[in-house]
Length: 468
Image 1 (cartoon, rainbow, N blue to C red):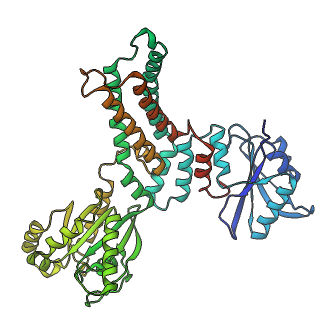
Image 2: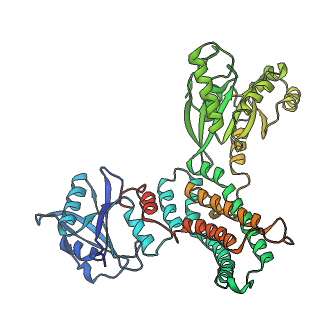
Image 3: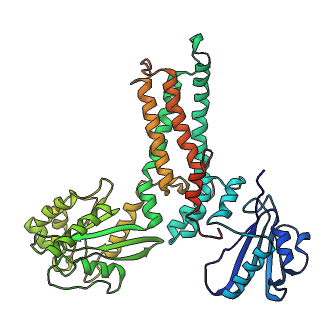
């Protein structure tokens, strides 16, 4: 059997700080740390206890006062013996401590190796391990909530339940193949259709949460588009409550995208101010206009900023039609009628009724701040619309989404092979039906890591930071 090494790495961010934590994991973790330790013998310490002592450097001289926290297998994070050493955050102390550990018998950990060992030793499944990375990278309250929900394992439990249902019916089909010469039927085709339809609906529902889930995880991209002088830069500044973009009455002032982020009620909004969309012979401005349309297509939400005058002349309808041609099917459109402070409340009602059709229409004033809070709330409402109340069932991982899509295709092919309705004879033979079932089961198993390859694991864990 391959000998398992004992690994070490700095687990806290690089550089100088108040404290630094060096993590050691492996069968010899406690014995190796004991070699460079002065204080209560760590080899006799019980699990989940912390001890004050002194770290000795490679030359035998005192390096620093430290706290060593002991976690014994199998109840540690990795399922192995772990020692976490807390020292003062001097870069010199950190490097000398690592040198002492390497001299005493450790090897440097690869990126994500601690979490990979947790997966290998059954402490986490693959989806939960990926949630660890999401937890570390979470930059907002909403992203943190999603990572916590995934880490609790309910998503994995849900996927495993779906897979177990498919395995049960698949086993009956495989039994039919074993007795193919006997011409017997073990799997009720009507029951198979019912199970496949229910699971397909669940899989598709999970997959449909990916766009919104990913937007919440990474920050909701919101593109602000419109004609020149509609007030796009003023709106960006109003949303950010700062002078981020240059505001000018001269058409074509904004020729490239201007981006910034905003935290609204725990959600990160990625605001993108774009060049004004109009007909022009200026090649540089045309390049900016094309970038504006590209940003609208990539955004989760596009705000088309217009004015009362544009609605009255019909140019708002024309520009809305042009923008729609570039939007992706899952991009939501908000019509924001700016400069509402220049018209009466009665006229605002008429303007909203005459505005182009959109997912949401609102009259605002970037100048006075009127309805800016309502606009931001509309952004959040659209971004989270349709998401399940159980945040553990929101898909944020592109690999999970790809696996769900593959499972959906396999189940759709299975249902096609079973015939158009439960009363029809199956179109496909048993061996082909079984193959579609195997593909669906395999795709779901990839999510939790019940079926993996070294290449897949290396790709996933290489994205983790060293020390996690």
